[in-house]
Length: 185
Image 1 (tube, rainbow, N blue to C red):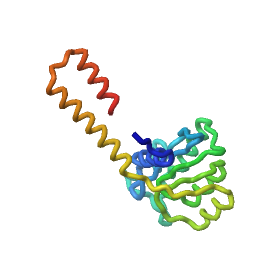
Image 2 (cartoon, one colour):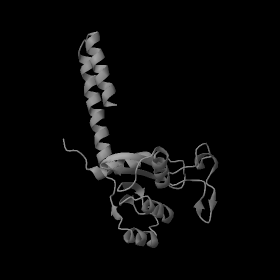
Image 3 (cartoon, rainbow, N blue to C red):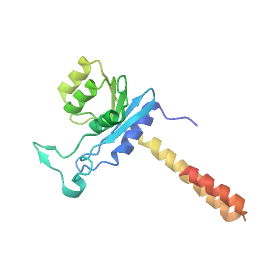
Image 4 (tube, rainbow, N blue to C red):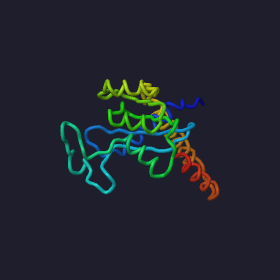
Protein backbone atom coordinates (compact mmCIF):
# COMPACT_ATOMS: atom_id res chain seq x y z
CA UNK A 1 0.00 0.00 0.00
CA UNK A 2 1.37 3.40 -0.97
CA UNK A 3 1.44 6.01 1.78
CA UNK A 4 0.22 9.56 1.24
CA UNK A 5 2.79 12.32 0.87
CA UNK A 6 3.82 14.45 3.84
CA UNK A 7 2.18 17.48 2.22
CA UNK A 8 -1.13 15.64 1.89
CA UNK A 9 -0.84 14.23 5.40
CA UNK A 10 -0.41 17.66 6.99
CA UNK A 11 -2.94 19.36 4.70
CA UNK A 12 -5.51 16.69 5.57
CA UNK A 13 -4.82 17.45 9.25
CA UNK A 14 -5.50 21.14 8.59
CA UNK A 15 -8.79 20.29 6.89
CA UNK A 16 -9.72 18.11 9.85
CA UNK A 17 -8.96 21.01 12.22
CA UNK A 18 -11.16 23.31 10.12
CA UNK A 19 -14.14 21.11 11.03
CA UNK A 20 -13.86 22.56 14.57
CA UNK A 21 -14.26 26.12 13.27
CA UNK A 22 -17.09 28.16 14.78
CA UNK A 23 -17.06 30.75 11.99
CA UNK A 24 -20.08 30.70 9.68
CA UNK A 25 -18.31 32.64 6.92
CA UNK A 26 -15.26 30.43 6.32
CA UNK A 27 -13.89 27.37 8.13
CA UNK A 28 -10.08 27.44 8.26
CA UNK A 29 -7.56 25.04 9.80
CA UNK A 30 -3.80 25.36 10.30
CA UNK A 31 -1.11 22.86 11.26
CA UNK A 32 2.42 23.88 12.30
CA UNK A 33 5.11 21.29 11.62
CA UNK A 34 8.78 20.93 12.60
CA UNK A 35 10.91 18.08 11.30
CA UNK A 36 7.83 16.26 9.96
CA UNK A 37 6.17 16.40 13.40
CA UNK A 38 3.02 18.32 14.23
CA UNK A 39 3.75 20.85 16.99
CA UNK A 40 0.46 22.79 16.95
CA UNK A 41 -2.88 23.10 15.27
CA UNK A 42 -5.56 25.74 15.18
CA UNK A 43 -8.88 26.68 13.67
CA UNK A 44 -10.72 29.97 13.42
CA UNK A 45 -13.13 30.75 16.21
CA UNK A 46 -13.85 33.07 19.11
CA UNK A 47 -11.74 33.46 22.22
CA UNK A 48 -11.82 30.76 24.88
CA UNK A 49 -15.19 30.92 26.63
CA UNK A 50 -16.47 33.60 24.24
CA UNK A 51 -19.63 33.76 22.17
CA UNK A 52 -19.33 31.81 18.91
CA UNK A 53 -20.46 33.01 15.49
CA UNK A 54 -22.38 29.76 15.00
CA UNK A 55 -24.45 30.67 18.08
CA UNK A 56 -24.82 34.45 17.81
CA UNK A 57 -23.86 35.36 14.23
CA UNK A 58 -20.72 37.07 13.05
CA UNK A 59 -19.66 40.40 14.55
CA UNK A 60 -18.68 42.15 11.32
CA UNK A 61 -16.85 45.48 11.13
CA UNK A 62 -15.52 46.72 7.78
CA UNK A 63 -16.53 43.43 6.14
CA UNK A 64 -14.42 41.41 8.61
CA UNK A 65 -15.57 39.33 11.57
CA UNK A 66 -13.78 40.76 14.60
CA UNK A 67 -15.01 38.03 16.95
CA UNK A 68 -12.78 35.31 15.51
CA UNK A 69 -9.13 34.53 15.94
CA UNK A 70 -7.69 33.12 12.74
CA UNK A 71 -6.51 29.51 12.55
CA UNK A 72 -2.89 30.52 11.94
CA UNK A 73 -2.90 32.82 14.98
CA UNK A 74 -4.49 30.15 17.17
CA UNK A 75 -1.79 27.67 16.13
CA UNK A 76 0.99 30.22 16.77
CA UNK A 77 -0.52 31.13 20.15
CA UNK A 78 -0.64 27.44 21.03
CA UNK A 79 3.10 27.24 20.33
CA UNK A 80 3.71 30.25 22.57
CA UNK A 81 1.51 28.88 25.34
CA UNK A 82 3.22 25.49 25.43
CA UNK A 83 6.76 26.58 24.54
CA UNK A 84 7.00 24.98 21.10
CA UNK A 85 9.73 26.55 18.96
CA UNK A 86 8.47 27.88 15.59
CA UNK A 87 11.86 28.85 14.15
CA UNK A 88 12.41 26.84 10.92
CA UNK A 89 8.90 25.35 11.16
CA UNK A 90 6.35 25.09 8.35
CA UNK A 91 2.63 25.82 8.36
CA UNK A 92 -0.13 24.07 6.41
CA UNK A 93 -3.30 26.15 6.03
CA UNK A 94 -6.58 25.39 4.31
CA UNK A 95 -6.72 28.93 2.87
CA UNK A 96 -4.12 31.53 1.92
CA UNK A 97 -3.25 33.57 5.05
CA UNK A 98 -4.56 37.11 5.49
CA UNK A 99 -2.12 40.01 5.74
CA UNK A 100 -2.07 40.04 9.56
CA UNK A 101 -1.45 36.28 9.76
CA UNK A 102 1.23 36.62 7.09
CA UNK A 103 3.13 39.08 9.29
CA UNK A 104 2.76 36.87 12.36
CA UNK A 105 3.98 33.84 10.39
CA UNK A 106 7.07 35.74 9.24
CA UNK A 107 7.82 37.09 12.73
CA UNK A 108 7.52 33.60 14.23
CA UNK A 109 10.36 32.29 12.05
CA UNK A 110 8.23 29.91 9.98
CA UNK A 111 10.04 29.24 6.69
CA UNK A 112 7.29 27.73 4.52
CA UNK A 113 3.56 28.23 4.01
CA UNK A 114 1.52 25.56 2.25
CA UNK A 115 -2.08 26.44 1.46
CA UNK A 116 -4.87 24.44 -0.16
CA UNK A 117 -7.13 27.20 -1.50
CA UNK A 118 -6.69 30.77 -2.64
CA UNK A 119 -8.61 33.25 -0.50
CA UNK A 120 -8.25 36.97 -1.06
CA UNK A 121 -4.50 36.55 -1.58
CA UNK A 122 -3.29 40.05 -0.66
CA UNK A 123 -0.51 41.28 -2.99
CA UNK A 124 1.36 42.80 -0.03
CA UNK A 125 1.25 39.48 1.84
CA UNK A 126 2.79 37.79 -1.19
CA UNK A 127 5.44 40.53 -1.35
CA UNK A 128 6.22 40.19 2.38
CA UNK A 129 6.60 36.41 2.10
CA UNK A 130 9.03 36.93 -0.80
CA UNK A 131 11.04 39.58 1.10
CA UNK A 132 11.30 37.27 4.13
CA UNK A 133 12.32 34.29 1.96
CA UNK A 134 9.30 32.31 3.14
CA UNK A 135 8.45 29.55 0.68
CA UNK A 136 4.80 29.69 -0.38
CA UNK A 137 3.32 26.69 -2.16
CA UNK A 138 -0.20 25.83 -3.29
CA UNK A 139 -0.99 22.27 -2.13
CA UNK A 140 -4.61 21.40 -2.99
CA UNK A 141 -6.11 18.75 -0.75
CA UNK A 142 -6.61 15.44 -2.53
CA UNK A 143 -10.05 14.63 -1.18
CA UNK A 144 -9.98 11.13 -2.64
CA UNK A 145 -7.14 10.16 -0.26
CA UNK A 146 -9.25 10.62 2.85
CA UNK A 147 -12.30 9.08 1.20
CA UNK A 148 -10.28 6.09 -0.02
CA UNK A 149 -9.04 5.29 3.48
CA UNK A 150 -12.56 5.53 4.91
CA UNK A 151 -13.89 3.26 2.15
CA UNK A 152 -11.12 0.74 2.86
CA UNK A 153 -12.00 0.66 6.59
CA UNK A 154 -15.69 0.31 5.81
CA UNK A 155 -15.00 -2.61 3.46
CA UNK A 156 -12.77 -4.34 6.04
CA UNK A 157 -15.42 -3.95 8.75
CA UNK A 158 -18.15 -5.18 6.42
CA UNK A 159 -16.10 -8.29 5.58
CA UNK A 160 -15.35 -8.87 9.25
CA UNK A 161 -19.01 -8.75 10.27
CA UNK A 162 -20.00 -10.94 7.31
CA UNK A 163 -17.57 -13.61 8.54
CA UNK A 164 -19.04 -13.34 12.05
CA UNK A 165 -22.47 -14.21 10.70
CA UNK A 166 -21.11 -17.39 9.10
CA UNK A 167 -19.10 -18.65 12.06
CA UNK A 168 -19.98 -19.71 15.56
CA UNK A 169 -17.17 -17.97 17.43
CA UNK A 170 -15.90 -18.65 20.94
CA UNK A 171 -15.76 -15.86 23.51
CA UNK A 172 -11.99 -15.56 22.93
CA UNK A 173 -12.50 -15.20 19.17
CA UNK A 174 -15.22 -12.59 19.71
CA UNK A 175 -12.86 -10.65 22.00
CA UNK A 176 -10.20 -10.75 19.25
CA UNK A 177 -12.74 -9.47 16.69
CA UNK A 178 -13.83 -6.70 19.06
CA UNK A 179 -10.21 -5.61 19.60
CA UNK A 180 -9.50 -5.64 15.87
CA UNK A 181 -12.67 -3.63 15.18
CA UNK A 182 -11.71 -0.98 17.76
CA UNK A 183 -8.32 -0.57 16.07
CA UNK A 184 -9.99 0.05 12.70
CA UNK A 185 -12.18 2.86 13.98
